[in-house]
Length: 400
Ligand code: PMP
Figure: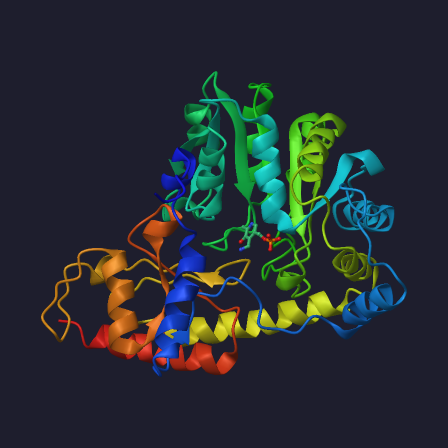
């Protein structure tokens, strides 16, 4: 007899990006050189002033449980950040700290979804939203957002997707995987639809907020302050400050929802690491030059990746406005034949061909809810980007 698993876990897919990382590590362990363009994090080091804030916290005895919501010092830093960057006003009981933004998405759905409640997820989407909604008995309603509209949700598509059971709309700007950034006009038009559906709340995932290349990303709350009562902002320090391993995210929203999430955190992780919280407070309230510097680095990598991939046969590539991913269409590669005589029938086939034939790991668009596309990260080192893009181009040229 083995220990029986719950139905909700048996039905759950493993995270595509975490699975890809595992596959790359396995191949590398067999001695193969694999260039990894799947990575969902910056390769940069956490800035020194942030690390030293953590060291001081640990040495100064800041090594105990904190309250589940997060230390007052970090929550104050979050409130100040929301005021400074987003002109939004939140009180101490309206912000909460989690073990990464991911935990807060998890707790928000856990706190609000009843069986069959619907969560509108515009596609392409970050892989975890539908799965986390499903774990909590929610019903993801996937709304395709074609490339023709810059991969963005239109007011018409939102209106059609809303039903009496809709609980949440999830908006992610800048977007993973497409890099799309919603403009003020885009957000205003969506806000107008939301005004007509007061039962719909909006989770805005702003984790890539600072990584934009064509102007600033806006929060829906800035554009439509009247929606504040049904808005949950999700953000964190992982991407902007190269702090993925520190595991600190935060959310801002109505006090009653934050209190419910607080209860859940109190019964799951108890709190995020005290030392990481001290580091995150230093990140949010310290010198922001490191963020501008990181964005400059990513912009260079983005431009280089575009230069090297543009014109690759069968690949239709556009420059992302934010985050650190390209999401080219590979419609022109479907139906092509590999040098081994295999016909490529899907974007998953294309990604497997690139892994086997070019030793470059990329993710298939299917994992992000829209095919045939590939997601290619420029979060990693320039040498890897250059070698990876050259190998991809060569592999595409070898198809007949
Ligand atoms: N949202 C999006 C869109 C992401 O890409 C990620 C990380 N891949 C997260 C949330 C989670 O970030 P973290 O848990 O590290 O704060």
